[in-house]
Image (cartoon, rainbow, N blue to C red; front, side, top):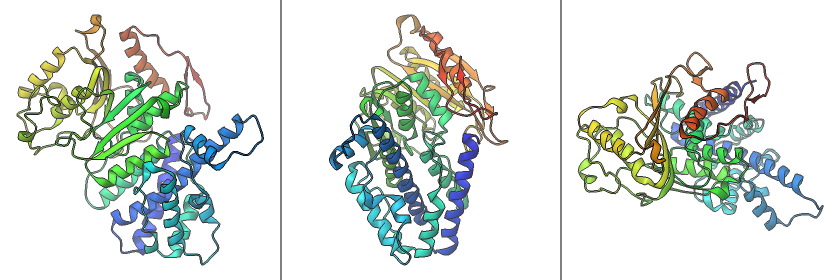
Length: 446
C-alpha cells in the first residue's frame, strides 16, 4: 500500500474515533480534538521510543544492562523522547477493566512531561471528563496505528483533524501544515545541513521536521546539527509545534506571538536558514506599528492592504550574511504592481533572490490554488549576483487522487538537480527512493 493510501486509512480511523466523541459528549470540537490528538501523540512517542531502543540494542557490544539515566540520555541522542513506564501507551492498554482510565491517562501525560522539559504544560490532561468506555475504545482504536508512513505523519494527522474541524464549523483550514513534498523540495534547495533554522509562521513545525529528515538522510544527527526557532500567534498551535519537535527529538524554541508585531527572537540577521509557509494576502495589518522597524522591514511598507511583502521582507531580514531562505508564497506576489513592485525591485537589487519555482494547483489538502516557492541566498557567488533561476514546475507532479497532487522522489530530485547545476554544484545521482512506486517496489534513482 502506498504512503498516501496508508495515511488516508489512518486519517479515516482517527476521524471515526473523533466522531464517536462528538456523538457521545457535549464538548466542542476544540475541547475534544486535543484529548484525541494527545492520545495519538502518546502512541507516537512510544513508537519512536521503541525504535530508538532497537537501534541502541543493535549498537551495544556488551550485554550489560544500561542504567535508567544512561538509557534516557542515549534515547534522546537517538532523536526520540524518553518514555517512562508510567507513560507507555501499551501499559494503558493493559489496565484491568474498571480502572479509572481518565486519571491513568492524565497521569501518563504528566509522567511524560516530567521526563521531557520541551513539552512541559503542552499535553492535554482533561481525560477525566470522558467515560471509561469511550477512553477504552479510543485506546484500542489507536493501538494498531502504523506510523512508518512518512517523516511528518504526526503533523499531517493534525492538519487533517484541524481541516475537518474547520469545515464542520464553516471555517477555512490549511493554516498549520505544509504538504511534505513542498517542504522536502525547500529543504533540498536551501540545504540546511547545520545551523539555526527560523520559521515565524511555524504552524505544527513541519518545516523543522523536514529539515531534520534532510540532515538524517545525509548521515548526521539532526539534534546535534540544527537549532529550531519558531513563532505562532496562538497558544494551542505553539503547544502543537513543541509536541511535534519533541517527538522527533529536536531542540526548539517555539514562542507565542504575532510575527508582524512581536519580534520575540530578535530575528534581524540572526539565522542561517528561514523556511516558512505564511498566510497569504492577509489584510488589516496595523502597518503604522511597523513602519519604523527598519531592521525587519528594510524596504518600507506596501501601500496595499496585503501582508505578502511584509512576510517577504521579514524572511530576508532574518538571514545572516550567508543565510538562505525558502518559502511558499501566493502567485500574485510575483507580479504585484505599485508599491509592492518597488519593494520587489529593491529586493532584487540586493542580489539575494536566487530561485523562483512555479508549483501546480492541488498540492495543499484544503485549498486548490497554485503557488510559488521563493528562494533567497545572501551568500550567492559573485557570478550569480545578477541572476535568478526561474523553474516552471506547474506540469511536474504525481496525481495521487483526483483532488491531490504531490512530487515523486524522482521529480523532487530532478527539480533540485536543476538548481544544483545552476549553482555549479554536483548533482545528486544516488537519491534513495523512500516511497514505494506504483508496483510496490523500492528503487534507487540514477
